[in-house]
Length: 367
Image 1 (cartoon, rainbow, N blue to C red):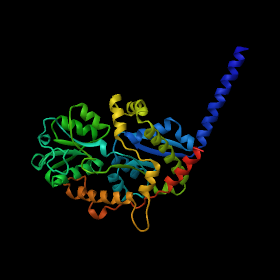
Image 2: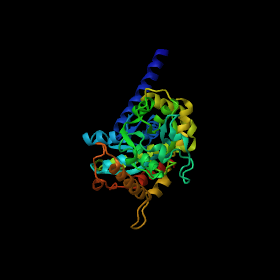
Image 3: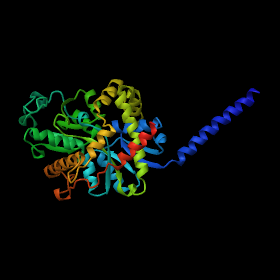
Image 4: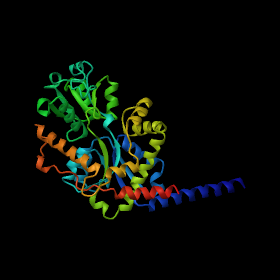
């Protein structure tokens, strides 16, 4: 009798999981590639919590410990590598010159989690507030001129360095720039091969753990660094509903962070452990979540809103960043910056229609 009941229970369980698998298999699939950063974590969390299935989509998620330029290059080489990705404006603007992409939403703001670091004995730290409009920033023309900075070319790190140098009436012609990212840049600073590095989270944690000191954040130098969701324009033609559902799933994770950010700490630690060779402390994970600003749906809709012939806030932001990108390209003397200012265009496709569809999806969930 007992064995018969066990077989029945086991059969019901198998039937349940088989049904769930069929349901998941039948959902439309979207290939999403994210960086191993906070916004990548929120998408991972959305999938882990089943938010994608809840709104009716199957997110095929890839997390990469790399940078935005690399992700754009992967898509250029293989357009099927992703349908949606999320990078900062610099790689987006560069990428949109070779590929038709559509900006469909904002993932987060990394202005507070991107910074320039030096060794604790650097003379750059000897002066603070040289420019009285920026009292918290370290450095002076005398201590910065001729220094070597490691940045990943055409990334938010390069954008931030431009803005940092502008505070001292300087540009790339006053310093030396080498093309290194993340952990390689940290190693170069540690070994004395460079004088400063531009990093973003979570690599900032690794630099701070080695005793390196922050001279400025992107927020300090007024360098806005939003992470933008972008979709391959060809993919949008037959998948509007799928894209909206993907955004809705992500926005459910955003709502969770807004409601109780500290509740995400353990999951963030698991995420970083899964995709990194480093162990990140609980304290850092909580600190990093709190420093990352997320933008609620209604606020995003206002940022995307156009009135008459005017530009939306997002369009204005991208125009300003495109101007800084031309400075990056013009000022650098390395082979990595080969584009001319004529080739730099603002992103051509910016729309709020998917966010509006996501609003309807989320509204129906809450009824």
